[in-house]
Picture 1: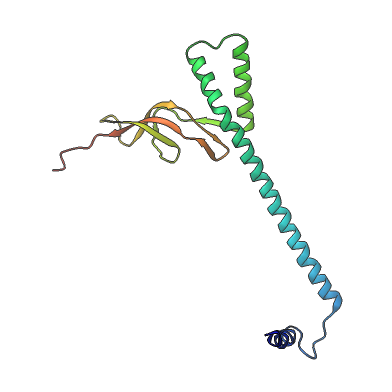
Picture 2: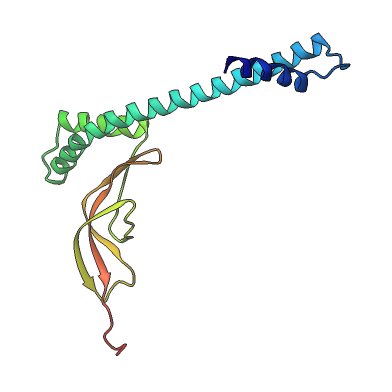
Length: 165
């Protein structure tokens, strides 16, 4: 078996370096240098992309842990219990999370989208023409384009007409 490998090696060399063809060592080294520079540039881009993704994932993980706190702050505010110094702290938390890139979404009347909404209740009504999120039970949050938590909604579907018979 080792004899087969030895006999194949000269054939490969003959294909790469043909007899009578002279290779310029400077041109060969220049080509190697350009190839290595391109490989290094690609490596740097890949490492930077991976570093950016790792940063986004880390920030997302921290923001996911803060979502219950933001929900509690919102509930306290809706019941009028958020006053004084606590209101200033709540405002500062909201400002900081928005500056980082956390966005709250989900408003009543939006078209229901199962990609970003989680339907908890269903109803039918003649008032709507498409499936609509009629009540926001819990707002959704996203960081950049990543959904951290879908909006939990009550969905109203259009009534089916029985006149098709």
